Structures are given as C-alpha cells and as structure tokens.
Length: 145
Image (tube, rainbow, N blue to C red; front, side):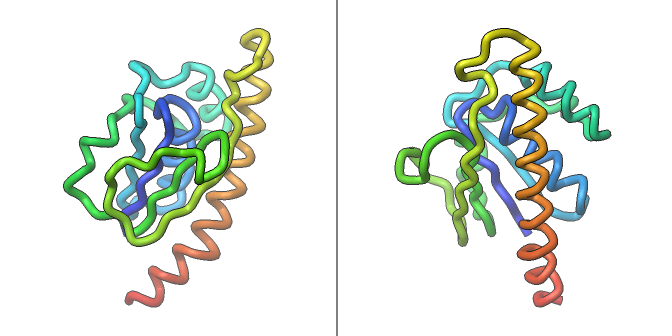
C-alpha cells in the first residue's frame, strides 16, 4: 500500500500526517512532498510531534516531482482550502482524498500562538489518520491477503 501526502511546502502538516500514519504500520510505503517545498521542517512541528513520541527527524522537505515515476494507492492532499482550489500536479494515483488542515503559521502572532495551533492541527491529523488507518486501510490490507 503506497500513500502520498501532498502539501504546499512539506514542512509541517504533510510531515505530521506521514509520521503519524507510519507510526501505525511500518510496512506501509508512505511519502510526503510539497509543490513548493521549504528548505527545512518546522522546528515547532518537530517539537509538538516529539510531545506524542513521534520524531520528524531526519526528514527533509521533498519536491513532488521526485515521485513522478511512482503510482500511489492514495494521494492525500493536506492544507487550507478545498480540493478544487488546490493545483494537483501530475502524480499517478488510484484514489484521492483531501484533508483541509489550517496552516498554523497563517495569522499567528508569536511562537507560542504557532505552538498552540500546531498542537491543535497535530491532534486533528491524528484523529483523521486513526480513522483512515483503522477504518479504511486495514480493511483493504485484510481484503488483499
């Protein structure tokens, strides 16, 4: 099962989603990338993920074009806006989902505000990944065996 998380910068939300889903099953092939990737992972995202025992190190934001030769079972876009507002680059996939998580950096006043928003987003992502893994992926994995 190959899962691809796509975001704009690949520095926070898609990295969190990838790491959380991977924590459920190391056997899944999970990737994340950005349309315009940042040059680093958000230090605050690393911090709030460490609070729940998940490390975002040594990941580096990736550009989606690195995965152009692959086909994914799921393309999951994470980010602000609706799916219609996102420009999906040429990525081959069987199923597509959109999870609209707000950007914790947008309209934030200071690092503590960003930290609180990152925790909220982390918890939202964890809830979505719990559902996705236990209600969707496990059924498909069991059906294919």
